Length: 129
Image (cartoon, rainbow, N blue to C red):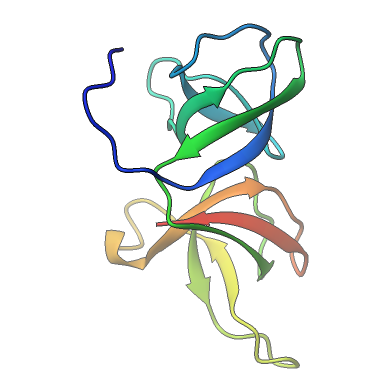
């Protein structure tokens, strides 16, 4: 890949599974705030701007997302799952997210993609569109 132009995006610190990946490598989520080289049919979250010299070492990814938020969940949210907003929490009134289902939910309901998993009623981290 050769970068021709860019608009600076949201840069996030991550753990990089594979050591010495080239700068600008497209990456996908593999675990909580952990990335590896994107392969066929992967959801690439961005490009590696600061590679790791060691396996499972620190790095930085410039994403295509607007923001990274912590948000309560109404369902089990796995890594890389697309999420949508769900009914506000009945006790606190805070916004919550649930799983977005392809073929059932329209694209306009997409809120983001989970970069840190959580159980139902937990707190996930989401990269928002």
